[in-house]
Image (tube, rainbow, N blue to C red; front, side):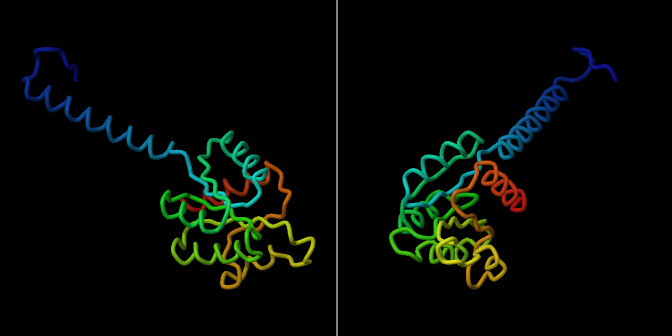
Length: 164
């Protein structure tokens, strides 16, 4: 059907415009939701790790919320609702990362957590094997420091794709 000006009542034209506007706003909302930057909470007491990871993750389009200890990390977690958390094992106390991971999983059970560790080599403990026991170490992934940017981003993307 060809729509030519004057061939239909003005009320129909207004109704058609309203439908087009509502579809436009719906599609725009869907696109904005899909394109929203994912927020990553990064908790590590090493400023060099924070700086490097922020640069890598910002470059990949992520919004990084950084914290330098467990207390600050938990405050930012609750205030900013990240999509994923990356937590160092040893910060002010040698078990802060483990405790923080447990606390996060209690309050945010669906939040993916990556635990970073530089102590596997020293202790001989294979933390990746412990990932199968969510009661002992409730984290989705364990990464040994140093980690390559490609590995870090690939794991983040994998965990976030499972969250959707």
